[in-house]
Length: 224
Length: 300
Image (cartoon, rainbow over all chains, first blue to last red; front, side, top):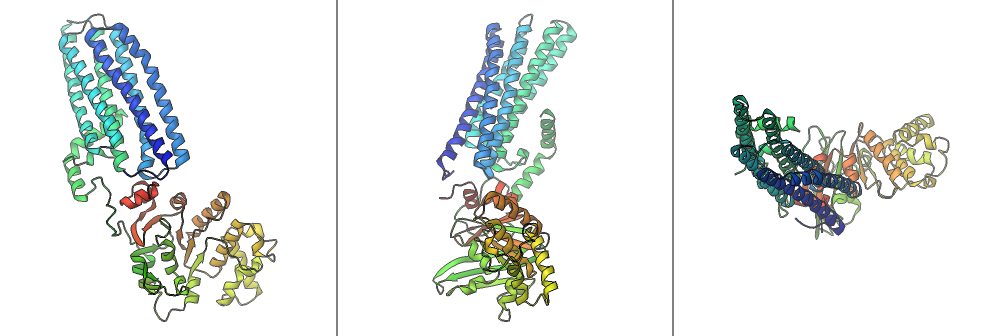
């Protein structure tokens, strides 16, 4: 892509992209943290994650502010207009992702005993997939890579499948009364949080698609 | 958001295959028409055009320099069409073809066909004086005659025999000034010189002068570039209203202005009409690389 005649225009766009990258990286490490909390039942790390959410919220406010200033001062057109709009929307998706990681951390603290390994693995798997998706999404955003955005968008199905399996297992467990109902409920909610994280990442992929193409429906894309 | 996602998921399940097919056949695959391609992209034609241009070429210096290359486009009835592009792209030259203002430039030759209500304006039997009344023009710099406000408006109608007596003149002056949004400001000083008005008022006086001779089309060549933002806003508001009765073609360097006032936009580049289409498409999602570079400030 050719540079703008006005250099500060490009610098401001880069500034927005950098800020989104920082925020997404912060979210990635929150998800990474959740994986650790879960595999090691690390309560003190869980508390750190809950606390770190405030930083992510701050990022969102800053991105919003920068994007609004950019719109007001530059009055951009075409894809230059879509970029700050997407930055605002992506920042709000990331903010929700941050909330969900904090929510998972809160629920881990409430567990009365270690979850059964099979279920723990599911949760960890879901977190791992979402972290990779998020990582790829940031790269796709920086390069406005439509193909990659579509791949990410489709990958959410894997998280959904893990979640369905997890819920099934937990339902059986509750019927058999082999595990405290309270713990099972927390586990369902945690799975739900991770499943929602996946959904928010697909929203990010949709925003990337929109920024690059100006079209809203990613499902129209012929990925071949 | 959750709701939206659910909708998209089911949409994908149900129609992914057909969507993909549509996508492939309609060739909506992201990617702009490359710079090298100078064929016009977008819809040149409209239903019920007021003016229709077919393969218009313009040469300067006895054919030495070609300023416009085979431009075809329609100007619809009751629409504002904006012509944008970098300096020297030919947009003003093209605008001046529409009422044969280029006839006054020595060594300038126009080829192709430009019709107004189906009649070729370059036909031998066309008299340019009534043509320029039918296709009026407003210039960059307000240029009222060194006469009174009243005489500025009534001058054209007198020449064209549109008014026979003082009463008819009075009526036409009032009507024209009202339409141009200037009446309230000048009704008590119609005998004062037009040149004594502010820049924005002078420009509206020129618009009043243009509409006094009952045109079908109004050409505007950067009508606001010499005006402050408030006078500009008043003219833009006026353009919105004038569209109800006339076709308007406006050349402007302000992309914001083009995006505010027009329904269709044409992008010119080095004498070629690169892209033409609905204004929102040109400014939100242009099809041609050159259009995108220009409107996003990447032209260089």
